[in-house]
Every structure is written in structure tokens, then in C-alpha cells.
Length: 377
Ligand SMILES: Cc1cc2nc3c(=O)[nH]c(=O)nc-3n(C[C@H](O)[C@H](O)[C@H](O)COP(=O)(O)OP(=O)(O)OC[C@H]3O[C@@H](n4cnc5c(N)ncnc54)[C@H](O)[C@@H]3O)c2cc1C
Image (tube, rainbow, N blue to C red; front, side, top):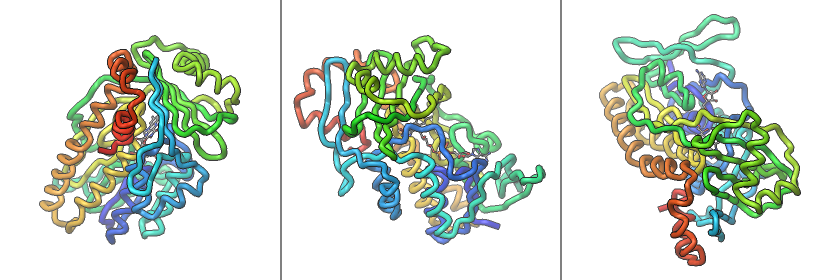
């Protein structure tokens, strides 16, 4: 019998397991993936995400991966460029983009060091119910049978296509149309000028320095534009159309990896709790990745959930009340960033470009813009 079973062991799940184990809970952490392993992501963590890693004692390990602190920001639009130092949050004066195989492994290792039990390559296939309440999960074994693990609470941190949400019948309480398709790859030979983002009409791109001297170059394309089957051509062409400067940089650099593509980028909030179960991270709430907020928000949600669960977990009434408050806080705190992501994902700078052109040389305006971009208010 565990206190909590966490399904999914990346940003939301491993962070939740770490925090719950630190609070003295008996935690089982499961993931169907092998670790360390990569997952689709353009990697960027904003200052509030790094502040959480710092608080959890992991920022040093993250920076030791070689991913640089990105202390300069350049946000480019047709006819306007906002550039300058990244805003600071305490001592953290930039964002960072570690590879996910490194970040997620660090989080899992920290959870295990704290006492969580971790089982990789373990797929949850069913929830176990007693008297209308989830009391465990059934997961596959290597021999093809299933095993039951029981807990007071099952946390689904299993991503936007969450199995726990599906099996618990978690209602979607808000949904908006998909905005973009995403493409990215890793490049050498691109000088590190910090985080650089380019927004064109219907397309956008980003240069995100990561580990090993490589730069992740991302391209987002509005779904209003027709999809081309030749994805590599789309990637390169949309980068070219996003910015002549970016196009020149790519011509001097070298694409070192295959192209990664993702068009399954839904926007929604699910009801993140029910009797004996809760959702965290993308399972609870997913938004277009153009503003790069999912990792940071997964950390914030993991902290919110762990704080709410500082109660006796065998007291069903207290747990239900705590999860209802968690749900309310999640909806209230993340709705502004969600709505802002919907606007960003329209990739329609024509709607606000005049304002940017008029204010681009005002340092106070740039700082306010950068703070909003980083989720600092
Ligand atoms: C193309 C793209 C680019 C992005 N770029 C950024 C960015 O630059 N910055 C940013 O902050 N965010 C970005 N995001 C979003 C970010 O990657 C996610 O918000 C973040 O990974 C959410 O973490 P999570 O732990 O909730 O879910 P996930 O990272 O999806 O992890 C879920 C885990 O659950 C496991 N799992 C699923 N089902 C089961 C099951 N049945 N049994 C056991 N395990 C299971 C999976 O194997 C997986 O490891 C991007 C997303 C995409 C798609």
C-alpha cells in the first residue's frame, strides 16, 4: 500500500514524486518509457521554473549539464525588435534549455534519492476502484500479465493524452481549437546570442541554445496555412520566411539531427480531480507550446498539488476538499497564461505590431514585455 502512485515520470510526475516523498509520503512512480529518454519538447524553462529547480536543490545539476543560462533575450517581429537582458527573478537572471533526457533523469533521480520507488517501462492499463473511489492502478508486467498496486491517491502526470484522465472519465472543462504545428531540430555553428524568437505572419521561429554547443531551432506554423507533406522543406522555408537574419544563420550552420514534428498540440483544461485521483501537468491542462510554458507550469502545479496534500491522505473528506481547492487554484492561476498562449499561437503580429514598433526603443516597455513573456508579474 502506497500513499500516492504517480503515473508519468517527467516534469510533472517526477517533480510531484520528489515533493511528496520529501513530505514523508510513500510514493510509487511509474512510467511506460525507459529512462533516460527524450520526449518532444523545445526545452525552454522560464525563470519561475528555474526558481523551482533552485528551491528543490537541483539548479546546480541542471546547469552542470552544460545548458547555458540564457541571460539575453531578443524577440523579433516584422519591423520591431525587443532586445536586452532577460528579467531576473531573485538571483536567476535568465532561462535555460537542458535536454529533456537530462532534465527528466535528474528529477527522477532526485525523487528516488528522497525515497520514491521508481519503475520505468511500466504501463498503467487500468484504474482499480472500490466503492466509487480509485484505490490503485493495474500496470503491465514484462510477462504480459497485469499487477495491482494500491494507494490512497493516484496522480495522473501522464501527459496530454493521459490514460488516468481517460480511465477516470475526467471531463474537459474548457477546450479551444489547435493553433500551430511545431517543427524543430538541433544545429551546430549557430553563435549563442541568448534566446532569440522570431514572429512572422502565420509562422514563428526560435533559436534556443542547449547542451553540447548545439542550438535547438524551432519553427511554428499556423494551422491556418496548408500543411506540406515535405516537412523538412516546410521547416527550412518557414524559418526563412520568419526572418532573413535567422535564414543567414542557418545557412552558416549545420543541422545535426533529424527533424522532429508535432501537430498534436491541443488547448484544454480538464477537471483535474475526482475520488482518489488527481491530474497534474499536461494531463490537467495543456496549451500551445509557442510561448514555452509547459515545463515551468508543470513544476508550479507539482508544487501546488504537494502543498494541498499536506493532510492525512486516508481521510477521504479532507483529500476531496484539498483537491477541489487545487482544481480551483489551477484554473485561476493558469487561465491568464492559457489565454495569452492562445493569442501568441495565432502568429498574427499584424494585430499588435504598431504598438511594438512605436515602443521598441523604450527600455521600460521592453522590460515589461520580457517580464510578461517569462511569466513574471
Ligand atoms: C513540440 C513541443 C514543444 C514544446 N516546447 C516546450 C518548451 O520549449 N518549453 C516548455 O516549457 N514546454 C514545452 N512543451 C511542453 C512540455 O513539453 C510539456 O508541457 C511537459 O513535458 C509536460 O510534462 P508532463 O510531465 O505533464 O507530461 P509529459 O512530458 O508528456 O510526460 C508524461 C509521461 O507519462 C508517461 N505515460 C503516459 N501514459 C502512461 C501510462 N499509461 N503508463 C505509464 N506512463 C505513462 C509517458 O511515457 C511520459 O513519460 C513543448 C511541447 C511540445 C509537444
